[in-house]
Image (cartoon, rainbow, N blue to C red; front, top):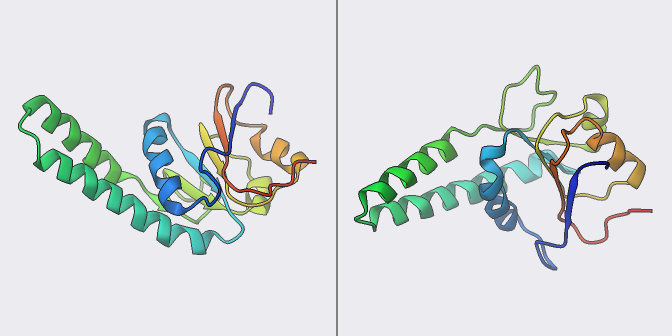
Length: 151
């Protein structure tokens, strides 16, 4: 993972889709996102639910402020959050989206060119290097699962 930023353990002992959604919120403006999961279909629904809860929280903050500049800023954020497409269909050339949830095998067949990758399942070190090889320099790889095999 030459030239990439690697982040581990930032989600604590029990990572959840809520933690993933909060972290994704901080990275949503950096381009395409890939989430590596064993079962993409079991991740997309709870993640999307947490994403919409987070968008609602931003809407509540917008409703509670009187600052016109802040209202405009929060309106833009909420609009952007609602415009993001979450998909389990891969590869990206065939299925347009912003947040892709895919298995390691799918990603090995079509390497992602994304700025952020979340690894939520066990991946061997060699495969991790292969799936991150096409990512631009200074991209972020977040290992958000305890017990990840890195030997």
